Image (cartoon, rainbow, N blue to C red; front, side, top):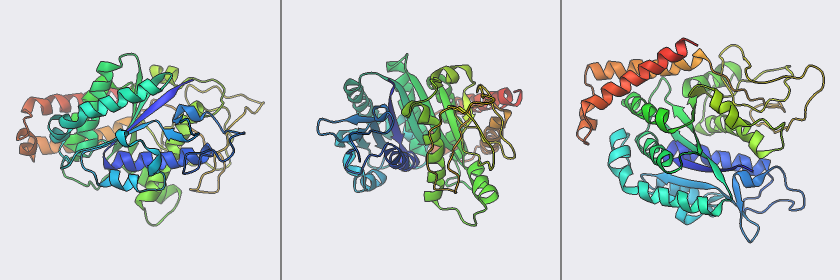
Length: 373
């Protein structure tokens, strides 16, 4: 049975992962104290994401990382904070200041050994940890810089394991002017170290809220819930009895980047889908999924608080749509780099100009690759 270790990095990654754990506990009927609601009738394969302790408590298989302690302190004091092992919560002091160089080379380098040691200890407790799942932002200094550094270290130490990233791309309105730099500098590392990167595009998420769900305002909690629905849907084939589709085999067949989110559909019947999602603004396309014509397959039904629909469907698809957010990041990166805007923030931390040239070239290469789909 697969056992997945989640590494949640930075403020965005920890917020998203916390919502994921709450959703996973609800689906597996695990209480906030880690005990099953009904030990005689467990729901799904809890051991994929949870380790059962000797006292019967189910502890998330997770390492929590940030370069400043605020969000981690909040998680400790939260409703499920007591489930996380203290030695698996690792923080710095000063943060990365939205600077990839600080996250990757300076502050991040100071704590990465502690992170890797926590990962090793988690592996020792598992029967077989063959999948690493990282949740992080590509725009922040910690999520991008330290996140890419941890991925590099994971690939060096666990050559044969599967590494996949759930990575959040910035929206049109950025929290920091250098987010495009951070995205561009991170992606070459993920290309080398990760098996798959599931891109979560904030622009696409906003379109779902305003155009499909017809909501007037968007709260961070709602956004995190929608992204969590995507994560729970994708991982359900591991966590619940299914038709036996192995996501790793599907992952190996696909190109590197996916555009991950949920598309809401009314009055459609879909069978036997145990794959990842692909957001299409006006429609939905299917690949790698065999759909029975007459006999309905067994499907796990999971409640969805976003609307009144009972069923969620996940798809995995390579599409030229992935080029759209990558092209947006490339253009923003290029405009700043031509003017050498804010470059000194990075050069003062020991980086050189060539790293930016190489990152921009890599980003352009990926845009062209997906445009040719």
